[in-house]
View (cartoon, rainbow, N blue to C red):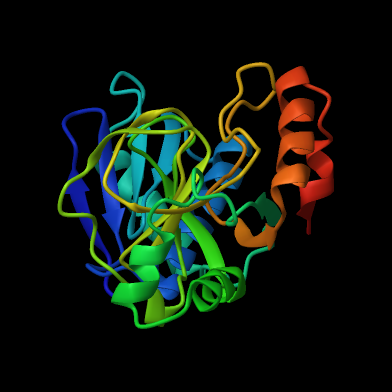
Length: 244
């Protein structure tokens, strides 16, 4: 797999592993992200400020008074030459989702019609999808999560909504996402989680992270309301959702 370096001004450059979205490419991005982090902690990459993973590249930000691309690129090359392990350990996250309330899933019927499925088949396909968090973007806490069942692929809505409620679960193309705040949005709304993807009260406000493996667990409206009350009160035990 070829690697391409691109400058981002005088304070960063990107290491690009390909021009498509795939688990293999994103796996190499995340492996390099981890390798640079270890090297930085060991003092082997002076001047590196942070690395930012995307679906197919890693941005390396540096202090221009302490390093340059000419200094750092050979060291990044050496890390890649050592080999980037695949299948890095990641968290497994199970998110509760309510699909049964029309208020939560206004597009579920249309998705079923356009994919020639029943509503229950759409829900089953979403629940069975092997999801992985690739990147965060657009707004704090919004995760781009690939791996949607291929039979559910649809383009974005032709007319985006002005307001999508917080915690809405939506699909478009080969992805799903959860809206961390009320915002405009053009994806198809098929459910809602009682969880908040961004909560400044938590030590780590953003819940999901690149590399997470993700699945959804179906809940009814009564369970949704119970969990929502706990989340709102700050008493919900988030550790119950995560395993390794």
